[in-house]
Image (cartoon, rainbow, N blue to C red; front, side, top):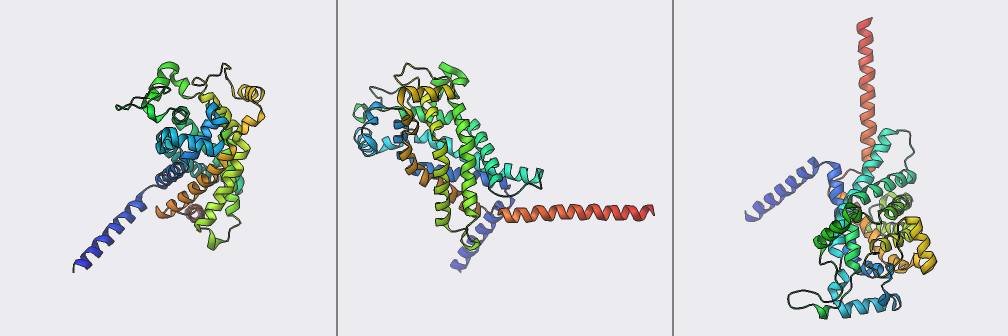
Amino acid sequence: MEEEKRERQTQQRVSLLGNVLDSTPVYAKELVAGGVAGGFAKTIVAPLERVKILFQTRRSEFQSIGLTGSFKKIAKTEGVWGFYRGNGASVARIVPYAALHFMAYEQYRRWIIEGFPDVRRGPVLDLVAGSVAGGTAVLFTYPLDLVRTKLAYQVFDSTKVNMKGAVHGEQVYRGISDCFSKIFRTSGMRGLYRGVAPSLYGIFPYSGLKFYFYEEMKSYVPQERKNDIMVKLFCGSVAGLLGQTITYPLDVVRRQMQVQQLSASNVEMKGTMQSLVIIVKNQGWKQLFSGLSINYLKVVPSVAIGFAVYDNMKLWLRVPSRDESKTELVSERTNISSSSVSSSSKSSQYQS
C-alpha cells in the first residue's frame, strides 16, 4: 500500500510539473535554458578565463611565464580560489547574458520568419538572428562584464590577507557591489560602458558566426543522431573556435580599454580603431592575439557545453522543436486562409 501511495504521489508531482511546463510561455523556457547553459559552461572554464584576462591586459609578471607558469603562480600566491577571482561577477553576467542571447536569437528568428515568409531557412537566417541577439544581450549586461574584468585583473598575495579579511597591497575593488559603486561614483554611467564599442563590433560577427557554424554543421547530421550529446559538443566546439578566431583582436582591445585606469600605461585609449592602432604600434600585432591559445582551450569546452546544455534543457523543458513550430505556423496560416475562403463563399451566397 505504501509503495502504491508513493507511486501515485510521484505520478501526481510529474503530472503537475508537466502541466506547469506546458503552460509556461516558450520564451520563458528559452530564457531558463539559456541561463543554465551559460552559467554551467562559464564556471567550468573559469580558471582559463582568469589567466586569459591576465595575458590580454599585459600583467608583467604573467607575460613571460606562459600558461603552466601562470597556473602555478596563481595556485601559489592566491590558492585554488584565485582561479575563480571575478567568477562571481562573470556568472552574474553570463546567466542573464546567455538567457537573453539564446532567447533573443530564437525570438528574432521567429519574427524574421513570420515577417518575411519567403525568406530562406538556413544558416544565413541564423547568422542574422544570432548577430542581432548578441548585440541585444551585450547592451543589457555589459556593466557586469566590465566589473568581472576589473576584479579578475587584480592580483594579490593571499599571505597578505589579515585575519579580518582585509588585503594589504593591490586591491582597488573589494567585490562586485564595491566595484560598481566606485566606477559609478568616479565615471558615472559612461564609465560602466567603457569598452562597449569593441564589444559590439566583436559580438555582432562572433555571435552570428557562432550560430551560423553550429546550425550549418548540424544540418549535415543524420536525423537519428541530432540529439546525440557528442555530436552537439563537436558542432559547438568547431563553431566557437571559428567564430572566436575571426573576432579575437576586438576582444583584446576591449579588455585593455576596460582596465586602462588600473594599468600603468600613460597612453590613453579613446576609440576602438584608435586603440587597435595604438596596440599594434606600441605592443606589436602579436598582442592582438595574446591569450588566443588559452582562449581556444576555453572556447572549445565553453561553447560546446553551452550549446549542448541549451539544446538538452529545451528538450527537458518541452520547448517545441523548430520543425514542430514550423508545422504549427503553416497549419495556422492554412486555417486562416481556409476561414477567409469560407467567409468569402458565404458572403457570395448571401449576395446572390
